[in-house]
Amino acid sequence: MDEGGSGVRAYVFDHEGRELATAYSEISTLCPRPSWVEHDPLELWDRSLQVARAALERACIPATSVAGLGICNQRASALVWDADTGQPIYPAIGWQDLRTVAICEQLGRRGYILSPLQSASKFAWVLDNVPGARTRAEAGRLRFGTIDTWLTWQLSGGASYVTDDSNASCTGVYDFLTGEWDAALLESLHLPQAGFPEIVPTSAITGATVKALFGAAIPLAARAGDQQAAMFGQLRVQPGTMKITYGTAAMMDLNVGPSIRLSPNGCFPLVLWRLDDVRSYCLEGSAVTVGAAMQWLRDGLGILSDVAESQTIATTIPDSGGVWCVPAFQGLGTPYLDPGARAVIGGLSRASGRAQVVRAVLEGIAFRCGEVIEALRADAPNPHLDVIRADGGAARNDFLMQCQADVTGVSIERPVVFDAACLGAAYLAGLATGFWRDVAELGRMWRRDRSFEPRWGADQRAERMARWKSIVDIARRSS
Image 1 (cartoon, one colour):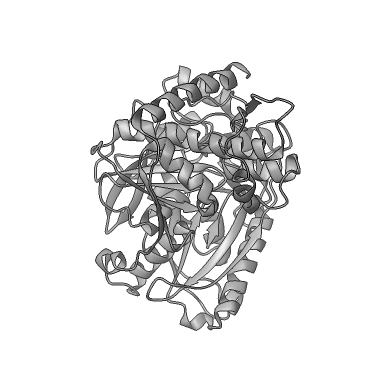
Image 2 (cartoon, rainbow, N blue to C red; image 1 turned 90 degrees about the horizontal axis):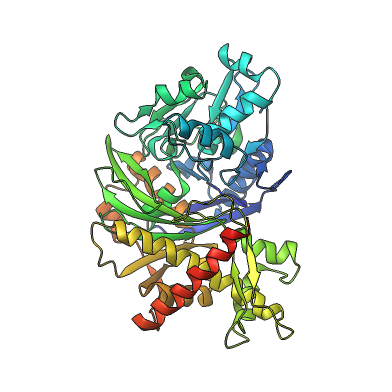
């Protein structure tokens, strides 16, 4: 099961890693104020249950045949619910939400480093703004969790209250040295540690689903942040390997091995996974708005009937006619870490039309991702990275993939299974249950759909990137 920023998916995979069936449902996203992003937790649960049941039905197999269930999820979204009733006390605050910038700045002046894109300050905001919430939290009546914890709680009927190191490392209150919750940071936010879930290995059985949900109790065998799950699904298990996932945002991850590594270039250290009590780490960079930018072309401007047609429209013209777009709809991630930046479209003329705008948005996505990859390569133990594996919905867009290869000067490999996060969650669950023996067995199952090779020379690439960075400066001055 994969709960993302714009929709939920469920897949059924067989022993060869082949997709037997899938189901998908969009989820609603509420933006009650500028830079606020919220979801209905009960809708998330309802849609997740629907797609899981639909995938099982389409696979034509009974729940008794399922070896295990793995969950992957948008990671730093924050939920708070009542321990007795299981009812949320406030909507889920999406990871992209920037309402807590002031809280994080205040903590920064006291020496604590916390990003508004992490969960911790969102938990604190809920307690500060929902009447009576702090009193209930201090009395031990509230539970705090990311999406994986919420879904596991619901699937188990409240019997399993856990998260894993990959998700915990995205909250901002995880101690990377001990693998536990950071008591000092929790205290600085006035968050009760007793209300937080147990941190368990990424691949491990931690209970089972309530039998009534699917007709059998299915082992809850893995939970992982979506990007870490995608790294595992792409089998980027060796230090120095990298992947890019195009979802609501584009997230690029570099495996740095068994020791944590810090970045001077705006990348975040995270835990990839904990297997057999050994933690692996990554550096992650983000281009905050990707799939959401395409949805804006569809829903906000109405110039796309379906985001998939962006490829066809973009290739009807030889270039964007001078039109450019910085898709900073919710700030700029790596390397700028500028939450105040705003999206800008420029270079318009009377000759500009639908195709030029669509192409400019796709090119803007590729250049933003190129900046992130540039930052990660500067941090890489092996700077001679020559292949990046790409997945996610927008990886289906051949125009974007070719543009990405051109901008980065790196070969882009696209797998047969586009939803690498779901495949990774399945791999992790299968390892926990013995469905697969080890990672070596999984390595024989990865299949490439297509490779995109860079066409630009080094000089052209450098010239285009320099021009792009001057355009980004306009977006930053527009805030």
